[in-house]
Image (cartoon, rainbow, N blue to C red; front, top):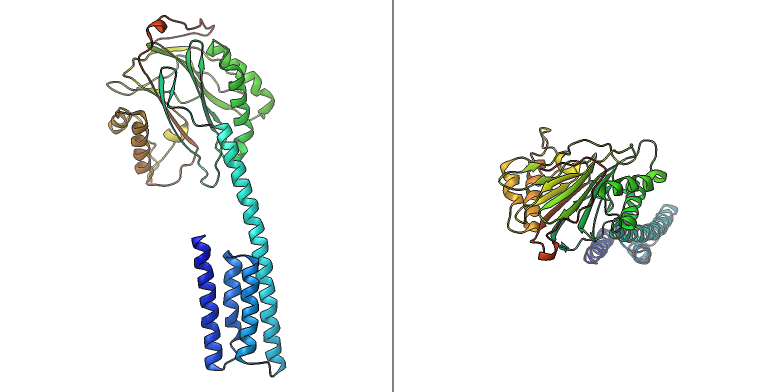
Length: 356
């Protein structure tokens, strides 16, 4: 509203200045009077553009009434340009309304795809940061979610090939399949296979989805990794939790296995997409996730403070340049589990497991 008021003031001032020059100099500078409607066509409504056009025509008649065919042609030119300005403003306003409607639709779709997670699910505190690579798009190819199962909290982080609106259909399919089955399937390895089966009809020949599933149990986390960057565990140093056996992403015949890792209440797990590790500085150097500064950031007192510190480091590394890929950071920190949950309620998976 403030910007439009400034544009209106500018258009009226330009019109007044042009009228003053035309009237005071007694010169046929009628073209100057078109400044008002032309400025209005860029930011104001069709009604205001038409009003300024009528004013321009009236001021032209007041300044020097037509005395020749040339003067009459100048008046006709003012009338024609004023009509063009009004029509242009009308078309622009319609386009802006359509864009606003599409933006609201994108916001609604984004909220459905990546609804904000609560700060705590079960006995696990969560903090999330997301940033699409396309600054004009509100929907990226990264998806995340969390559910509370009978055995404890379960977290999903997935990265659909591509980013922006083109990845929306597959991203929606990932979350729909997860939300249908995650709370009732006790085995995360079987869940990964189930998600792959559900996604089959939505994936093209070259499409794929990298996936992380993490189940949190007292004193440990169970990780299933299908082609995704491995999580990082905090401690005295940052420990990259590479899977014992690599698996292709969903859509490319995944062969997931269960990875069991120790996770005490004082430790955290950082789940992230490759928008973090692929971020480059001006020299093309990737973001150094293993740097001491990252360890200091991730061990900040509160999880949300830790993510803010990490994103500040990322921003300084890239020099504020836009990211080339979508970015999602999810930091999970277990709190002490209730006494009645200290026994192991984890399923026995068919895939190979390891402890780290």
